Length: 169
Length: 268
Image (cartoon, rainbow over all chains, first blue to last red; front, side):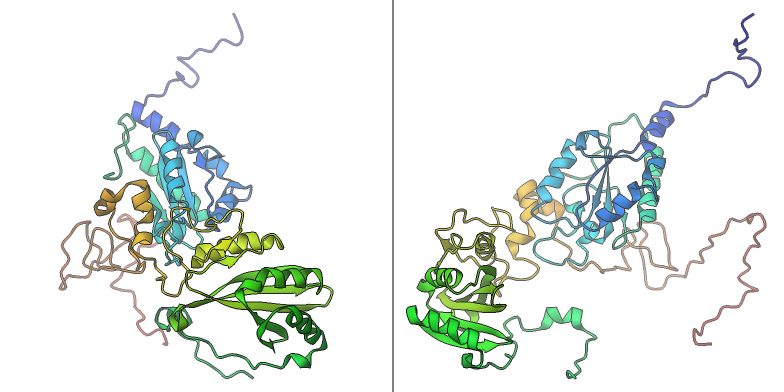
């Protein structure tokens, strides 16, 4: 008898786990959130720190991609100027569904201290936002906690349905 | 020592100080006080009309005619060793006498001196480009065009540099509101979604610290937490929040509010 033959009915049981489609799809989605490299200002430095070895975003399956076509989540890290507004919309449209947006820091949330003619007063005027991170700039821990919250949000939703429009537009 | 001025409202001050306020000037000295500047001024005034000249904070300021600017800067670069144009832009005097003051800050590394060439133009008048003399004037003149609307003749690429090409208005004019005019307020919405989306997206919220205690959809008042969407009235009971599980946590004693003492006075 072959030595390597495994008797699945004994010694640890069958290599089968029962789950629902929703759960396994959401498990896959939430644990490989590839983020679009989108540092617009000083928050981008904190975002880079989150990706580097000390804070190590790879633990969460979050890998920064330079193309919106490979990204699941857009982290708007920094001040969004009015000149740049059309490009954030274009990049968002190029991301494949399902897609999520994290608005990182005061400037992306509300315009922050830039109460001027040239700054978009909150990136949610342009694209739908799933998560707002407070701070100026938020620490890498905040961003990582935000990604964990986003993972919770993804797991709480049904996977099969197409993403509902998050905005009236 | 400088006179003390209260600095407790420096950030708010920008919102209520007069934007047409002109700061007091530092004292002016005679050009004859400095031998190098005196020789330079003599070389300039030999060929061009000099309207006014003085030394201020160790730098000579020379007022000339607007038409002479190219020739004056050429003379200064080629003969007087002022080889760098470090900065140039305009000053808005439209409220005072409908003019712009254009300045060119020149640096001589050999002489270790700086000269500021200035002249006035009427509103709507164009200036002569010095881009052929100094490459740095390329972007400076574009910025001047962008921010003040002053065009430079003979410039190779007279377009906006900081604001988008389809922008309307010149943001550095003193009459331009800091938070933007009607065009600026709706710029990104109009451009991306079209004017009909204005009603859906709504106007910009400029007060980012705004809190509405009666709006339970967007705000949660500490100590008065209610479910989202609840109607809030003034005579509501304070909700006692407990952040500990009912059964308690292993090894951690559950807080008993009745037997604990609350210290109200922070200065106790």
